[in-house]
Length: 103
Image (tube, rainbow, N blue to C red; front, side, top):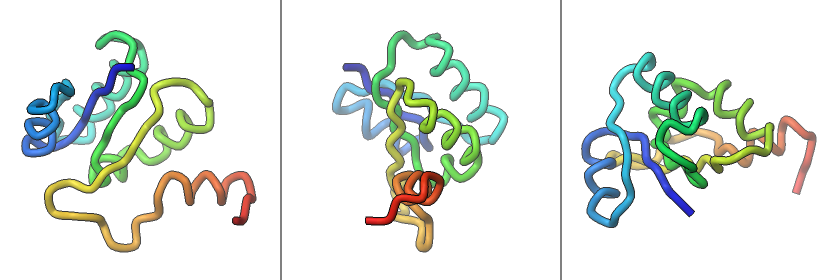
């Protein structure tokens, strides 16, 4: 199973130390390009895409659409070095809301 990370320089370098490749992105346009490249298989088969919360906010609709498709890669949101964004709903919360599931 291959992992890939999209984040700021600190996050990408941190994951590189444990052997996970990634790409540093700073703008929404770069993020959309890299996200599409990952989905198109330009980096090989990626099973899990790790993305920082700050970046995921920029393409929230694209991520939700992909998650609901049920296709790989699985997308996991993580806080960046500054910590969790207060009030940010997790992807699981959004999916539960979309399908009307209450646990």
